[in-house]
Length: 240
Image 1 (cartoon, helix red, strand yellow):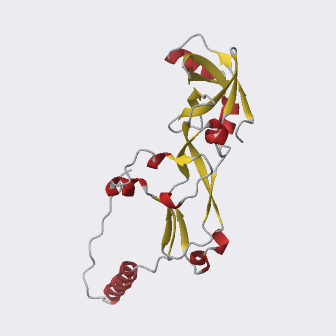
Image 2 (cartoon, rainbow, N blue to C red):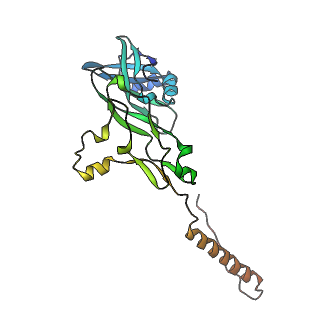
Image 3 (cartoon, rainbow, N blue to C red):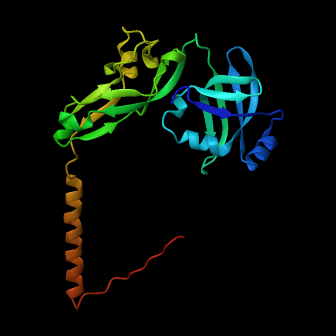
């Protein structure tokens, strides 16, 4: 997907909350373009185009081309703000890139070999703890995703960040500034990415609860059959 997406923009000469609300009411969203030693540019984007782009896997990890009044500019999406409960894009930030400067960006993780993993063949459950990973690289080396082969993963085994094989000239950002002699810092950076765990056995607590429920039902049945017993008062209240 990298280097393939072009987004048309229009210059925005007025700022502020009122102007942003007005733009959104017309199907546009405000955005800002910054970086590469140039002045910030305030632009507008078509909301629906941006919304559908965000639905594409890898869009946030792609180098995009913004078509502006100052020409085409290569950027990455640095931040996007969504409405708290509506399917609406509220604002976007784009960072200009320089071909000679390394950048840090999140890329999606793709798992392969799941059907061959011994742990899965034995009936294990796959748990993926990390769906995106921070990497640092030059724009020309940006991968669309990181592929992780789990075909040899056994039951009760995990692949950690340090186990990942990175493409050439791409490094894991989390390990860039960690002192290898600092065991705690290394442990903090070395998260499990994917694991295969045994299926959960039925909980003993649930079984005991089932037996207790059956016992209660039995006692209630005995009370119902006792014609001489006092009827307990019953009452219930419900708050709306």
